[in-house]
Length: 156
Image (cartoon, rainbow, N blue to C red):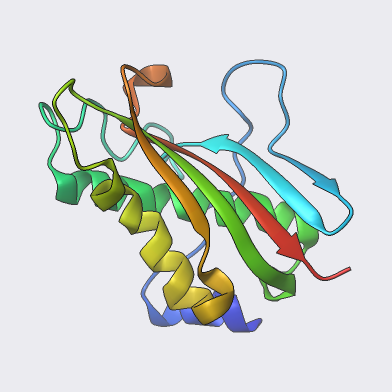
């Protein structure tokens, strides 16, 4: 078993099956040169639906948001595997854009986004350290609490 998927298993996690983007005329990723740009993805569950819905700061706690960010990263890793075939080919996680469905006074989008960042560092170590933006949004599609885009450098 590849190293990264083995680490997932050790953490009690597994990659969900691939899901098609829910809205719009988009694709899950674009690979150009040694970079993979992954479309915004949310905390969808393998059987359908979302891990949670609602706004951080009114409907959901930071801890629930953190769990949603972690689920979102699993979905992104599934899409990345679809792009490159083997998650061990990642040279470096370059950048995350984490959009958090937030109440107007919610000031903790970075703590929510840590669910994704922490998982990447658990899996990839220094290769998983990345630049990141974590911003509050007035709304996200389907009421999802977080949507994340990711840019990854991969081996040729």
